[in-house]
Length: 325
Image 1 (tube, rainbow, N blue to C red):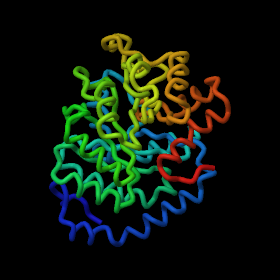
Image 2: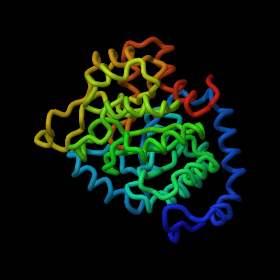
Image 3: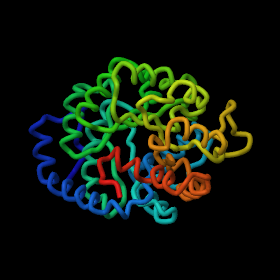
């Protein structure tokens, strides 16, 4: 199947039907097989990124320059699967970022095709969307029909606040379709300032839209964790651990920007317990963090074995609709 000629926000429904009909049963079968393997899924990384082989090196070089930090893989699907094997990660959720509306359709066509191979690759792609894209309902309807389990939002790349009405509408309709919504939250190390997904904007969305499956990445708000502790405790929101603990992999000691830092282990433990162990998802932000290092770090934190089981996989299974083991 050729994707290079796809243009626009969303092809016609007839064209989408023609392109995807042959893959529907394969996607359904792959998902059933994944659910049957639930007991084997002991470590799920809920936040990873990959890039097409043809642009991965160029994209990572630019992102590394913008953030002054270094990646831990080359950013391709093959390198992520190799990282997973070394780290003992059984499933990685791949979160595409649609940096402009024109990329949405292509991202979702490719992601749907790749999800047919989830049991071979261990990679489960979410759908991409952009608040400025045309018919957001049609995009989300198609994402649901294609078997995607969730969508990824990144307000800093859109330069649109998280609580903008366009984003709220997407989140609300995604909830009606039982899709998980993962959003970048807090500071983006490569795009700061300003912050387009503040803790206050998350509170506004939670109070106004009342989403049922919202994940605020980076422990609820990167570099804004005091606010998370003050304002998100008790709220109906999940968080992931992506790029939140350990050390920032600065390119050089002189690269350090602002007062950016990761959470200390005591801060991390405090926030996990405050938000609730049932609300925390293991995640790395690969390639920007080392999966093996993150598995080892979470394993060494003095949580109970049952708490670790929830963080590493069982909470993710609940959100994704995979039977809990």
